[in-house]
Length: 141
Image (tube, rainbow, N blue to C red):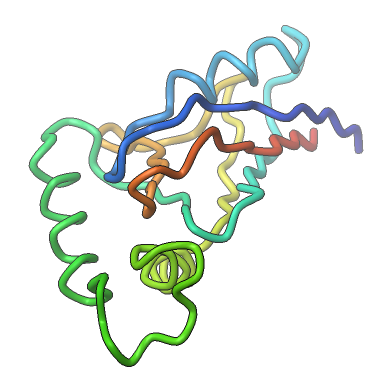
C-alpha cells in the first residue's frame, strides 16, 4: 500500500457551513498520479472549533438550516459556560465540533472522490472569527 499526504490550508470563512469539495479535489489531483484509481482518502481537520461533514451540496438551504439547528443545540452566551476566555462562541464551537467530528474517510473511485450525486464536503466553521483552517489529506492506494 502506498500513501500520499499533503496539508491544505483553507482561507478564513465566516461562521457557517461551507462547501470545500473543489479545494479538496484540487489538492487530491495534485497529490496522486494519473495511475491511482482506487484507495481511501482521509481528511483530518487540525482544529477543535470547526468540523467536517458530508451532506447535500445542491440546495444552500441545507447549509443555512444546519447552521440554525446547531445554534439551537449549542447557543452562545450561556451563563453556565465556564470556558469563555476565548469568547462566548468558543465553547459552543467545541460542542459542535465534537458532534460532527474532525475527520472523514471517502473512497477513491476511478481516481476521484467517491461521493454520491448530491454529496459535498463541508467545512463547518463554528467560530465568528475562526481564521484559516488546515486539513491533512492522506490518500492510501
